[in-house]
Amino acid sequence: MTSTSSKPGGPAVHIENLDKYYGTFHALRKVSLSVERSERIVVCGPSGSGKSTMIRCINRLEQHNGGKITVLGTELNDDVANIDGIRREVGMVFQHFNLFPHMTVLENLTIAPVIVRKVARAEAEATARRYLEKVRIPEQAMKFPGQLSGGQQQRVAIARALCMQPQIMLFDEPTSALDPEMISEVLDVMVTLASEGMTMICVTHEMGFARRVADRVIFMDGGEIVEEAPPEEFFTASRNERTRQFLSQVLGH
Amino acid sequence: MVSLLRNQKVRNALLQVLYVGSLAALVLAGIVIARRNLADQGITSGFDFLYKSTGWDVNFSLLPATANDPYWWFFLIGIINTLFLGTIGLMLATLVGTIVGLARTSSNELAQLLGRTYVDIFRNIPLILQVFFWYALITHLPTPRAAHEAFGMLLTSRGLYIPFPNVGGVALALAILAVIAAIALPVWLGRTSRLSQPFGERSAIQLIGAAAALACAVLILIIGRLPDEPFIDFPALQGLNLRGGLRIPPEFSALAIAIAIYGGSYIAEIVRGGFKAVGKGQMEAALSLGLSPWRVFTLVRLPLALRAMLPILANQYVWLMKATTMGIAVGFTDFFMIVALTINHSGQTLEAIGILMAGFLAINLSLAAIFNRINKAIALKGNQLRG
Ligand SMILES: Nc1ncnc2c1ncn2[C@@H]1O[C@H](COP(=O)(O)OP(=O)(O)OP(=O)(O)O)[C@@H](O)[C@H]1O
Ligand SMILES: [Mg+2]
Image 1 (cartoon, each protein chain N blue to C red):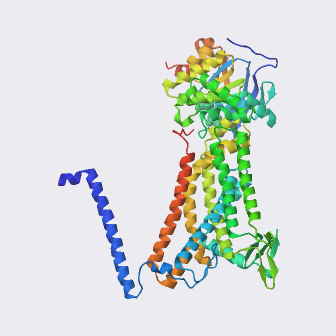
Image 2 (image 1 turned 180 degrees about the vertical axis):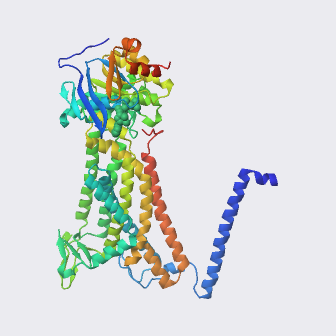
Image 3 (image 1 turned 90 degrees about the horizontal axis):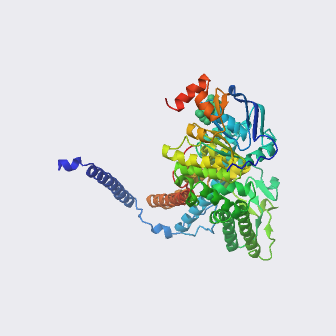
């Protein structure tokens, strides 16, 4: 059931000629990318190619040095109101979960809705429990993050982001810190989310996931987008030498 | 027999017994020798002297004291003085340390530089020199007649005179308890309401609790005021001297300032370490949820940093508590100085030193116990992943 709630107002994320430097190191070189609403993008590429840097620019965890980023029609610039507005609408899931270890799962899930969205506590908790149900750990609400397995923690992190009712979700290698047997429980949640029409940008090396849900696969190398194609084409018919080399590594030939 | 000696557990037990045994023998021999020597000099050992009056006076006491009071009373006064100086010194040191530590972690380069300079200077000057420095500075302030005045306070070479309410001792003690409650209540309220109250309302409840306790303190003072006297007693010049108000003697000020500044330089490093120990990931997650930088600081960064610094801070507090023994250098009658005076006047060296050690042991063990409890109460549950 793909609900295409495409309101007028153009793409979800529009990136144009993005440049990012760390000191003198040129981490992103004129990157351009447009993501439509409800589109699912998978970003892959070798380590150090700038995948994290690119998606972290989208919610301003990194500040870009050149080019233009527009999220849901709002340009990301030094205007604090713009940044706040965009962060409210963009959820992020990190490789190392980054849950708040001094708060219960329920507090992790309700803190931002209550403070940022000014949702009433009871309502925020009801929403939180609904999302815990959805990521299949409703019984863990009163535990602390340190008492959960890695897979459970990552599902809490996804639920935490969803509780803000974001329109866009960013994932930065959500399964690469997990033991193999826990990867699928997190991917299952992400597949469900995709099937419900969430706009998703996922940095991941889970090629099975990419085949199943991605509308487009983006391949980055050396701070550039080298190739972008629908998964079928990307996996079978790529003519780019660097892409083929990377694929042979992650697919393990 | 030989095979038994090869057994690891047996060996360890045997070593323990040997160790404890020789230690006990050493202590016992010491006591026997000391007793014989003391008896030769005509000094009777034992704790009977505690009930004799001292015949000398203390220059600072929160309790009534005269030269007719017995030694045990003076020991009590000494312990209370030490605790008082220690508490004030530790609070000031924590304040200084927090400010300097935050400056060192800030992104402002000037603040960083100032913070680093502060730590480098004051950590590397011995505490005793700093005590002497402040004492010399304070005792070279103008005489009472030329006192510096600000907000009704008078700063002179004879001490700092501050306006003080004219109230009875009981009311004063109750008011102090109420002020302590004003500090403790928000912490307690925060803990008990954490699962039932929204974050915003939680701080409102804490604020109301603190305000109520403070109002209580003021009320107690007003009810307990001495009749026929102005409510606030302002210090004023009378003849050559100052009358009224509360005098904070130079000895106390010098020690409190020195402990605050010296201790602050160590605590600054602990504060800095605590903030550095907080993973960047948690703060980024909080930002990505749309929380403002201030909320990220108060809800995520500070609570996690506090947990990281508290164990080390406890050690530092215990250590600074012992630094109050510098009182003897400027003549502040802290516990250590009372013990030293006792030894001089009564000759009961061993007993007095025994009391000194027991007293400090009790103070520092209680301090450690309190911090252990706090640590346990706020410890992060489960296994922590360092990200
Ligand atoms: N804070 C930083 N300071 C300096 N250099 C950085 C910083 N963050 C990233 N870089 C550099 O920028 C480049 C891109 O980093 P990025 O983290 O985006 O790579 P990535 O594609 O996500 O790699 P990985 O798969 O290992 O996560 C790397 O060469 C990295 O060393
Ligand atoms: Mg990365």
